[in-house]
Length: 380
Ligand code: PMP
Ligand code: GLN
Image (cartoon, rainbow, N blue to C red; front, top):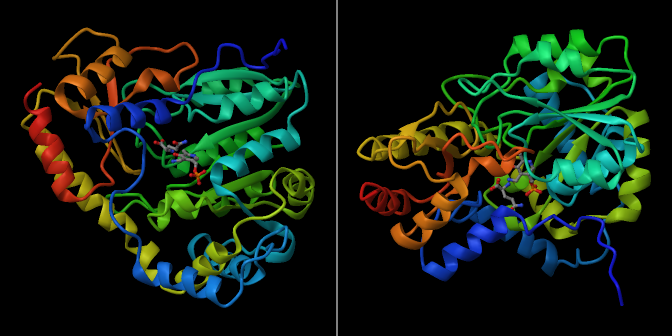
């Protein structure tokens, strides 16, 4: 049988590749972004309890209502955004499914989606599956700020959506108030949708507050705002996230969502409902990771890597310009094999594989893991 591939040149994701290589080589895995520490015991207990008490069948398609109510309370408290959990919040199988479903729901063939590079790897394949056209804008390579004038130049009658992500994976930069104001100005009076990937909303440092789209009523009217419990509660393997969007957008989103996954793991939803009561867990997450960032940065000072500024996320970007001229992918593989630490090369986040000699390290690790990794990195 001849197989006609929709994506003949698409390879297995870099995260899967690098994690497999790290395992194979017995290297410390600072590549794929996930914590190596345990989630809060109350979260585990709540999930076990839910299963034991019989919450083992389908959840409602839109999500477990008490969880949606709690999310509505949280978004109001944090961002002053009032929404109706019945019609404006949908629980998804992680942010990946939310983003994919959102793009599939709204993007038609030949319509344009503006993507800001370096860009998280799941966005473009969804655009391509819709036969949409991706238009790329590159973040300023010095401070990873968004060049809004270039975004403006790309906006046309064919523009259907703009994808943004803050705090930003892989650079660790964040959008500021002036960025959101600029976006509001550029999209005012148009039918352009915003898909805002805010999975690191609580992992933000140096007393900054997260500039969620939900703080901007004019933008929120045209936006799907996506978050993930995997990041907030150290359970990336549970794959539960959610989308906040106005009723008219949510109604369309759910038409696709119901046939895409139908519904999401019920005991996990009940456990997140319980754990959301412990507000300090998300309120103090930024501080927790800020300490990790500082700890890791200090350790890296005795290496030849040059550190980039990290304002949020659990990723540290470094330049290895002073070490070698190798392509970043080659160097990432060699580092894993020869030096026993696995990173992610930055070029995979660019449509044209721009090679700025940068690597990304995940610092969502026990201090001991970070120390062991740094010891190896000093030998490079
Ligand atoms: N968006 C970004 C920017 C991410 O970094 C990730 C995963 N780390 C996701 C989306 C996917 O989140 P989830 O694991 O909830 O699917
Ligand atoms: N988002 C995680 C990262 O950036 C990886 C998730 C995945 O493996 N798809 O490392």
